[in-house]
Image 1 (cartoon, one colour):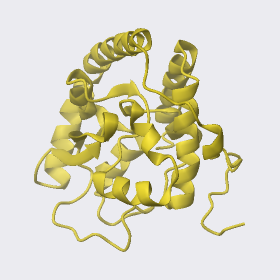
Image 2: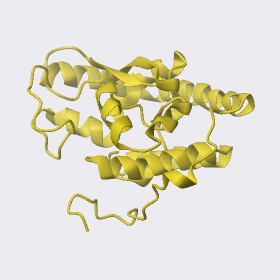
Image 3: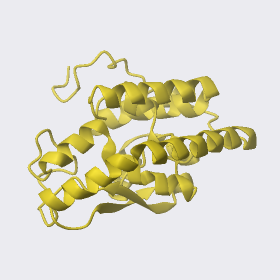
Length: 221
C-alpha cells in the first residue's frame, strides 16, 4: 500500500469515475429543499453561536493580532470563483511550507486556531456565503482556486463536483480524513459525486448529524 494512503476503513476505492456518468445539477425542487435546510440552519447556528463568536474574536485578537477573518478565493457553482470567509486560524505573514496542504502541528497555526480547526468553529463565517447564495450548508467542500486548477488537470471528472454549490460540510468531510495528496482528493471526490448523484433529504439530515458528532468529538475535518 502507498505510504501516503490514510490508514482508515474508508480505503475502499470509492473513486470510480466510469460509474459517475449522467450527473447533473439539482432540480428546482431539490434546490428549494436545500435552501430551506440552509435558512433553518443559518438561523439556529447564528443564534446558538453568538457567545462562541464573541469568544473567538477576543482570542484571535489576543493570540495573533491582525484581521479576524481569513478570506480566500474558492470555486463554486459551475466553476465560478467567490470569496470564502473563515475565522483566521494562522498567523499572518508566515511563509508557506513545502506543499499546499496544512500539516499536523503546523507551526503557522496559533494555539486557539488549533481548537477552532478541530471543532470547525473557524468555518462559522461561511454563514455569510450561505446567505449570499454562494454555498449550501451541505455539499462538496469549497476548494481553493489554486488547488482546483491542479486537481482538474490530474483528477478525472473533478469538474463534476462544480455542478452544485459547495457546502460548509458534506459527505466527504464526515466520511474521510483531511485530504493531503492527490490520492485523498480522488477518494473524497468519490464521496462528493455519490452525494450529488444520490441526494435525498435523508442523506442531508444524516450528514448534519454526523457533522455534529465530529464537532462534539473534536475530530476535525
